[in-house]
Image: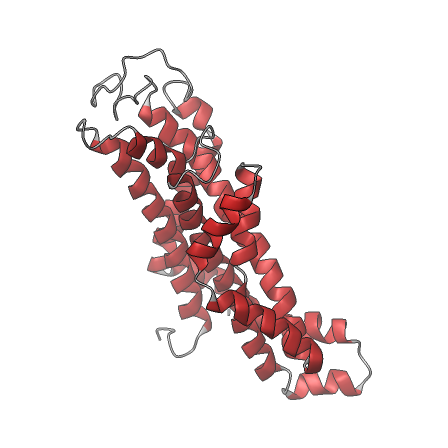
Length: 278
């Protein structure tokens, strides 16, 4: 069965891909799409929407629409890179714990359970507050550090099921190494779960980055949807009637998260016989 064709025929995944590609185009072609430089302060501060400034201007005279377009880059980069890192860590720990068992499983699952028990957002805030160097890579590190545990736990459960299959036992009997069994016999049958784990981690990363930036725990000089929300709140955008300053970045964060979620749902439907439509 060609899952790639089925993926793009699925309505949920099609909508998710369209939204995601829209943001990719914004991120790549931001210098040509944005009407002004996002750092330019040459305009009248706190102006409402107009033909010249569709979303108005900030408290220091920056064009909000240009900042929103440029902010797509950073928010998208954080989601994809952090989602990738968290997924890799989840795969390594989940597969190793589930297949090797014994003391290795006890140690890895103890660490995983600790991260699962501690609430994610407060842990991110505490770690970010104690890190002196602020920047995009600091945020990626912090979110990756706290966002892998759920995926590792899920993958471990799947490994425990797959390692008792006949074809896996046959490889073990023939003397294949543990690495060969894990990555040749077990891992290919978990790709759908790994992909779903990536989308979930990416959604978590986008929302966490926005939350950290909004609280002022990131680099406020960078341009992302989270920092736009931070400056909108600090400059009392709603009090001045500039609701677009806060609403548009928040809406785009929700749309990007929805695109990942829709693609995640589509993967579940295509790979789970119980969810797959006849």
